[in-house]
Image (cartoon, rainbow, N blue to C red; front, side, top):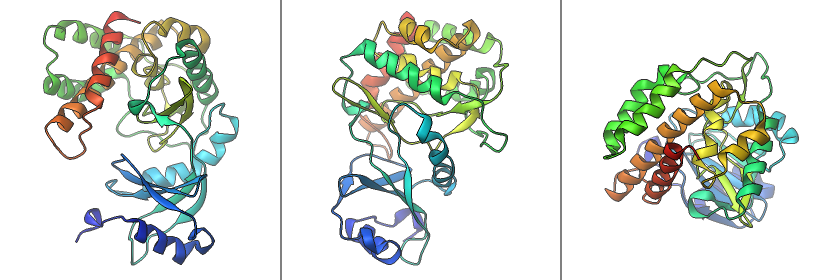
Length: 298
């Protein structure tokens, strides 16, 4: 059995805790549905164990360990905070981390009914996150670039999903992003992977942000795409008014990136419908709704 085929069970999680953090081993353990790169296990009421599964390197977990304690205190929404480190061992040759649990339901299984509140909340969160990052902050290798440097990724998603009837409109939005001026400010902190499975909701609004494995310093447009990907229709103008730091070029880049993210969600939904590994059947309608908002500009 290879590393990636190790079955992660509640008994394994408890054994690892007993070996490395025995004071936590008596807490109730239950699996959290979902997850791909990492598998999550609730630990008592306030903690979660994040187990490296399909991620080929520990880089993403180690990044969260290093930087979330720096960022969390100044963010206006709950985010996971690492509290214990699990190191590779004979039983499990990968990294794992005990983190605080962010209460709520993932947006891909929930909904937003308090649209204006959610728009204001997202804008406030990103305004607080998007400050100049230190020189030692991580730089992205697979995202964070100007849209003109992401054309291959866009084309792959575009061709795979084949959005009949709206293909020209989707490509026009992307072309606008490609033609937009680049980010000229200092690199700022960027979550980098804001999609409906990485935010949580309760009481009809956004209440937390999770999975900072893609965190990098760069162009904030990668997060501003969330105005279309996460928020209900009609909220983008309010969001950008509240955010207050995005010029026309940033909005054009963000809208194009939102189109690409929407196509990705649709592809993951398509893969789920086909029973392919990692597919998420419920992401298809989410991605289609996001793409509709992108094309309408709302």
